[in-house]
Image (cartoon, rainbow, N blue to C red; front, side, top):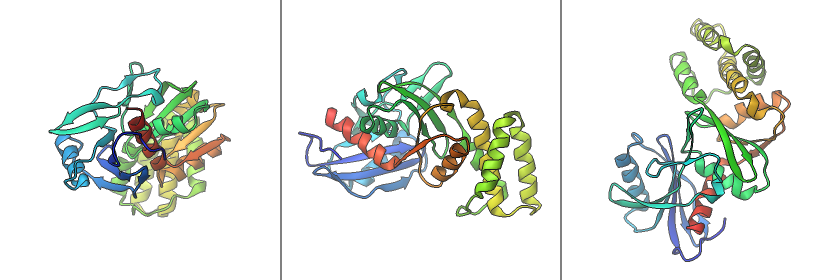
Length: 283
């Protein structure tokens, strides 16, 4: 990690993704372990309170990604060229990194913007697609000549959470790879059957006709099949970089590799921290 020049010995790097606030205390160019706090909601008041707790009363600068306190940049835009803006958040000064927006199809990248920023900084010659799965939304971003050219988003994580809730699946349940790849192939072939397949899967789960691993595999396979069918213009014949936390990294990797795609996997937390650090150094 690079060390920002002339910015003081200590600062706080923080990124909001939904209601998950991840932060690192950075001292002398060295980041401490990531701390993840679940906020009660994503309101400015809850965010400011979370940041104050993380600072523990010390007046360190706060570099913040993922928030809506600054307007996003319209694509095409160079993520590496995004500049921090000093803003007041509930009487707390933060240096905020803007997200990305798109007019058509309408899209907004907030929590994943710092991840993308860090990846492009570390891979300036990357030409292809960056896949950014999140607990709620996944973004497929076309990157060329260091610019985010366009992107497409899918609410796959939200759908998975909604469908899983009545199934009472254990959070630690693993997914069957065979069930996932088979269901993904079916989903790509006939994405219009998504709702019907989810209804059938939910019924089979309630009737106890499937082991938990197969339920998990089929659920993610059906959802990712529909997502991959919709995003085919982005990934077909492209280099794909995958920036996802576990367990999403495993399910997305399995679905993508089943399509014969070369997948470059990068650590999402490292990319996020790098994105915030580079932005602070350039401020």
